Length: 179
Image 1 (tube, rainbow, N blue to C red):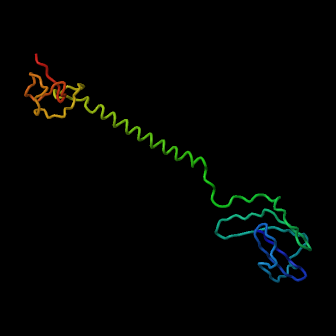
Image 2 (image 1 turned 135 degrees about the vertical axis):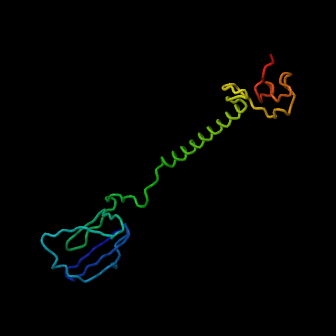
Image 3 (image 1 turned 90 degrees about the vertical axis):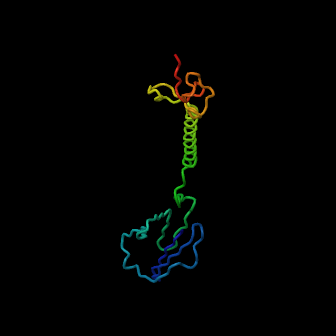
């Protein structure tokens, strides 16, 4: 925004004119009031800027200004003014736009890989379990048979026939060797 503040000491008239940047000064001022500033003028005199918004946090920038006593102020050369600071929210980081989805995808892939490997391992070794067998011995291998102990006589040895114990092919119970 551009603001012009003009004071005519003879007419005792204060005029404030406002326009967007790079638009010429309007003929009609935004504010025009009669005020006598002669009793406020002193020697020396300082010119400055002040702004306030109350409780609303905001920023005010004066990028350039010109002043002239007893006449119009010279126009501003906009090419020599500093660039206006960023307005609006801070732009998002490109690192977050690329790295965050990639890291999330890699984490999901790693978790799925671990789950698949655990399931495969459990299926592979589901038949072989190390634990306590039917004779009370620990540490010997016991395999699980899908058939109930007394249901099938196919594959049973003569020593264990009818006892409900399976042979090495069925692996439900440890096989007792005949002496």
